[in-house]
Length: 96
Image (tube, rainbow, N blue to C red; front, top):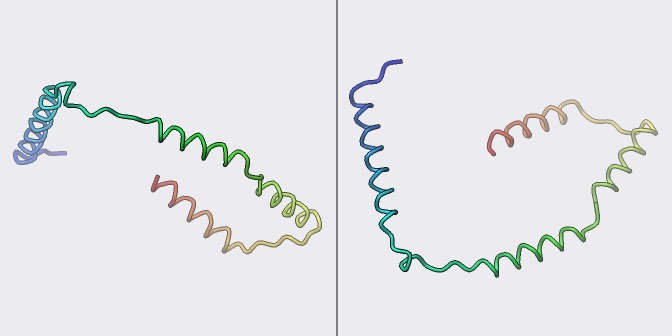
């Protein structure tokens, strides 16, 4: 791999600007930093967490349904649908 002079200059300029930003951030006086209050957000997160914990496990019912279908021999899946689901999951995982 070859690095051109222009590319090296761009990297140097980016590094210098990053260093300048760090210095500027270090100059901020504590009095000028706004106070952060997370209590409202924490309370909201706790309330939502409690509500989610109280929700019924819908998947357990679906698993029972599917298990009964499989055991009775009435569960059929198209291979195309399985392949599409695999591809969609792979794409979603890469986007994370």
